[in-house]
Image (cartoon, rainbow, N blue to C red; front, side):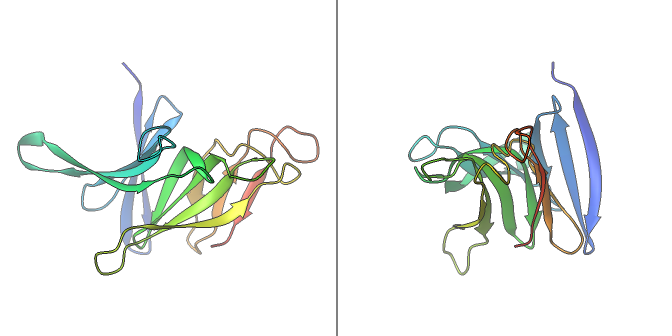
Length: 163
């Protein structure tokens, strides 16, 4: 059975609960009890999804696929972050020839539309590659994370992205 830990964070008066499972897979629980996460595969093109699980009656959960990743920016990895209805995360591949990974934002739907993906940063190797570590969002909306490789010595970097 995987080890489960829980960390509670508070941002702008909203409480966000982060679940840590096996120290690798992290999902985010919002103040309404909805659980958000990503899958490495599945979705319309089998390149991964962002999803929401909503609690229901009798302990049942309802799954909603919020976004299916496409060929360009695919295979989400690491922790996601929530802020004002937007979802932030990283992908293993970014669609470029070198494909060192990306940081993305899924913009909250407006009036019945679907989530729209916006690429905030594409890594080029020199500034990092393979951002598997996930993201942390600070109180001024900066995103922080780590990469597995790249950087000046090739051992990875700690990065900051401002949406």
